[in-house]
Every structure is written in structure tokens, then in C-alpha cells.
Amino acid sequence: MDPVFVRGSEDLLLELSTIRKANGINSRGNPVRQTMCPLGINTVNIREVRLKNSAGRLFIQLILQPADRVILGERHKIGTISTSVFQPEEVGSAYNHLFQPKPAAMPQLEYLQHICRRMATWVGLPVEVAVVYDKSIMRDAYGKMETDGAGKFTHPRVVYYPRIIWNKEFSWDTAVQMSSRDTKESEQWYKENK
Image (cartoon, rainbow, N blue to C red):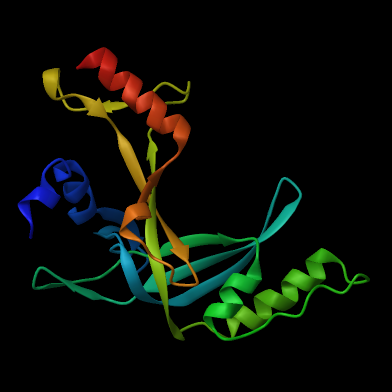
């Protein structure tokens, strides 16, 4: 690797290459810590399809199981990914299926139930998707930024959420994204505390 390319990008390379852990459930239904799905193109299959209602807004929630991966010479069981689907066309395109638009006379609930039944037929079928991380600052019940470490090694506590890109458009430039609000607050915290 070109040392000129690496210079100044050490923090980014460290963040992109870190193996992270996620909460998962083993075959007996007990909670366990599992490896979070690696960044990049991954093979996943739908494990569960749920129709959800949040504040009167209907959406589909998919529980996806990534395939086991060999990381640094060791086989790892990968934790599940939960993703909310508001536009089922994206998922349909990954499975080479075109959903018909909702007829005007059909209620939204009935239409989404039909789509859920169709997606349930894809349970267990592997498909390749891109996985990226959304990075957020952890906050307490009052909205105050939480920190980790001690003394001069204190830093804001961050959490990573895997997100699916169904059309496999993956770029290392956008592999880990943080909201502009969290980015500003993190930079401000470092100015004040370092």
C-alpha cells in the first residue's frame, strides 16, 4: 500500500477495518454477542417478515441473516440485521421481482399485507446486497452526549447500525456515515475537551 495514501487517513482506515460486535440470538433463543455484518457486498437471506404500524404509518420490517464469514482465518456467525422497508420496489429489484403499484381502490393495509405474503416466499433465498454503517453518538435520557474512557483518553460513545443497500451500490467513501448534527457535536466536543 502506498504510504502517501495512508498518511492522514489512519483514523479512517482503523474505523473501516474494525470488527464490531452486535447483539444476536442463538439457535436456542438466548441473547449472544455476534460479529456485526462486515462492510461491503454480503450474501443475506430473509429470516422473518413483519408488518408494523408506528404512529399510524405502516411499513414492513425485515429480519435478515447474513451468511457466515471467514474473517482473519476464523469462521464467524454474523448477527442478524433488522431493516425497515418503506419502498418495497427496492427489495423486489434485488429478487428480480417487480411489484405492481397499489390500485387506487385498495387500502394501504391490504396492499402491504399482499407484499408481505410475497416477501415471505423469499425466506431463506440468498441474495447479494451492500452493507454500510450508520454511525450515531449515544445519548442519555436527557439528550446529553455519553462518553467512554477515562481521563485524557475520554471520547464520545458511538454506536453503529448496519444498513442495507439493495441495489449493491457500495462505495468505501460512504461506507460509514454520521448525521451532520452528530458530526458537528462530536467536533465541538473534541475542541472543548482535547
